[in-house]
Image 1 (cartoon, helix red, strand yellow):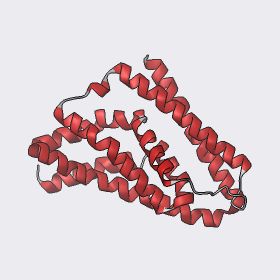
Image 2 (tube, rainbow, N blue to C red):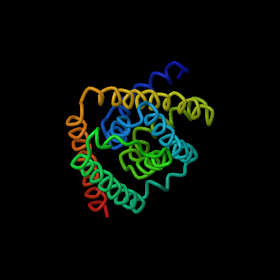
Image 3 (cartoon, rainbow, N blue to C red):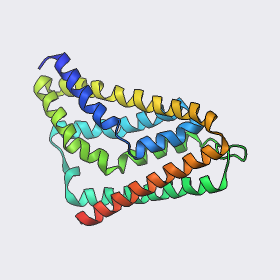
Image 4 (cartoon, one colour):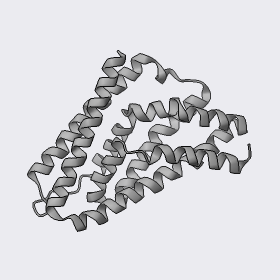
Length: 209
């Protein structure tokens, strides 16, 4: 496998996962309406903070995170967090508007913590790396041992940064066109989406326990 082959493979597989709607995607849109591109950058950084150690653990053969008990804990914790965030957004949709502070910016530290929690407690993200992503790790190891893994991750992570930054930028631009009513509808829709993901996470975790 050449460097070009590795790049094409990693890019194609990463795009298929990065562009799939999920909790991070919806949260990026919500925070993007307040912070613009900065929200996407922060979520990308927190994503890498959680993801890179997991990739190294996979490459090293330490995959204890795949144990059923740990999956259940992550699923339940992630489900509860998503339910909380979803209900919070739905409540904001009912109470606020653009003119009354509905687009008030959250603190950067809060944004960073939210990104860390959403990534660390996202079973979909973990399962992706234990299945599809694990194949990329194996290919990278075959290509060039640890150096191959680092190269693979570089080919992978830039897509997350570009995609989430673009999503948050478009969210900020779009909110200026939606107006107060449209903004409240957006909050309500994505709040319900987060609640739905939270329920799915809980059901899958409880079903696996």
